[in-house]
Image (cartoon, rainbow, N blue to C red; front, side, top):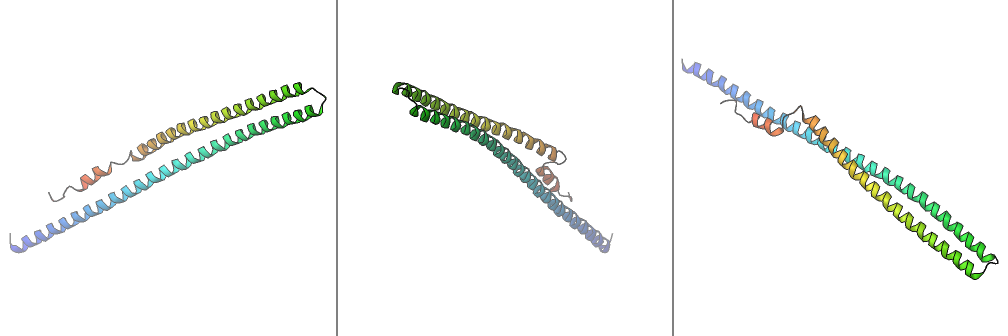
Amino acid sequence: MGNYEMSVITSQRQEIINKADDIVVLTYAVLAKDKVIYEKDERLAKAGLEIDRLKKVAKSLTKANHDHLAKKRVLVDQISQLEQQADNMLHSPASYDELEGRLQEMAVHCCSAEKQLKIQTQIAVDAVQKRIEIEEKYQLRKCMDYVKAYSGGFRPFHECYAEASISPTT
């Protein structure tokens, strides 16, 4: 074999090494793009879950607020009825002791109704918080299922990187 043949073989070998290096560089680029796309999908999934959670929290709080307002209206109506009864008693020819007894009954009834409303409001708040916790756990499980399903067709990035770093000239 002459010098010319050796130089041709050496130049062909160098071209093959250069092409292999180009393939490795392209492989790194593709893997980097896959990683960026996967990370963006993961961030979008998390943002979507957070939006869903906030919508449900807002809906639950709106419902609890409507329930609270309805109970408050009932209490206000009861108080106005009691005030009307008190006004009627003041204008009636009843005795002072009878009026005082009735006013005490009304005061006890108002305090009882107010305490009951506070208890019902706390129960509603606790129920909303429990629903939020359950929904967060459900959304987390749903997110994990999505990530598992999405990553089922892909190998982990570090495995692809390890394969790409094997030198093709060895």
